Image (cartoon, rainbow, N blue to C red; front, top):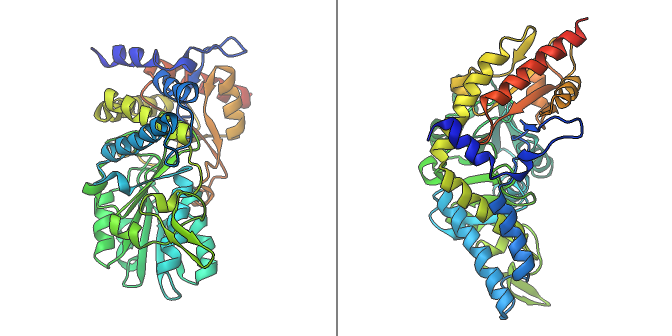
Length: 411
């Protein structure tokens, strides 16, 4: 089966892609970096839970609770295999990559960071990997440093030897940028951190949905990602951590299910991962994430990555034809499946509005990366981001609409 034929088959799995918008245009969805669409199998799995065995997990001995618990923990096992974690117990369910990073900042950070210590992050980070460390810096007194990027939108590796020192306790960096598309050389960055004894936290929100990821091969200490960007539901995320680190970390929140024993004089914590999962979890969402993992494995992550590279190369070449359009970040061979751009004389929100008239959904704004936009000398950008169900024909519609926008605002 050709790539085009397979993409057509895959599109049939996503009900929303059959939608005709109020203006009569067929939907072209290029906002996948914000959230992906959901296949029928994910929707059906969550619906089945609510219809047949809706109950709380871990706490009941009745049939529904046991079925819900089995499905919930099966999802954890699927995620562990998907990223090649050594054990499902190293998979912590959170509300998303943002909460996963905050969990590390508030637990590992409080336990290990002191005045005189340093945390290194990069200038291309999402706010979710900046703000928690700024908050902790104010409270704990460590120094927060930033690795710069080049004019081409690549991490400046030459600057690392002076930034990574014996004072560096943690190096936090994004696997793939949500603005530049840049795919960072993770193994090289981890090796650099190890050379000074630093731990690493990797933001994988834009990598896990789009390429094969092996947390053991990457030697990640912590790895965070979200369900809703990988065909799964919103409100669900994952934190992977090395077992010895998770075992030593204090709880993130207190409440039910994260305890082993509670008395009026103190409490004892549950084992990992439950120590970090206080309260009733997002059960249907975990089951939906498990179904999304099943779907992506069936498609094949190597195929997903290859398909996105093909679409990105085509889009990069076609968009470069538009007069006054500036693509942010490196060339197509060094980026993942997204292109953020500006159009001379046209505000990104106006670009998005005109594209919407053509049925094309893109994102406009700073994409939760204001410091990066400041570095690039722009206040905002528009962003087209691709996934396994997008086609070259859709890119052509996007480019035609960009030409139209350019004509409208240069009259």
